[in-house]
Length: 108
Image (cartoon, rainbow, N blue to C red):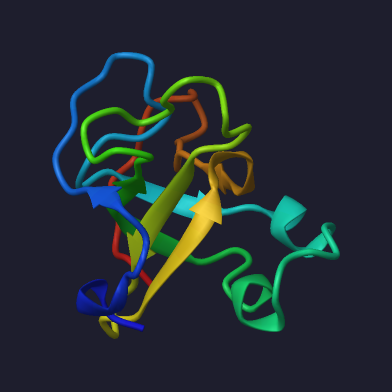
């Protein structure tokens, strides 16, 4: 899937201070993605890979969470080959260095 194939209602630009991720930040798919039976084999195949945050799901195109009807926020990552996949926020971590500071790097 590419960013043009996303069928969910998403926001491409946001700056809410409570967001776990902001546009263009990198995120790493953590091992929790493989510990949940509801995740597809495709999603699980991204474990440990780094991607660039390009979109966040939105119930109305204006807000990220809405009226408490959704439990998780879904972020979409774009990888080096242009492939895009959406992940629950709990399956993503910010890349950090040994001191805990955000660390840019190459996307996988």
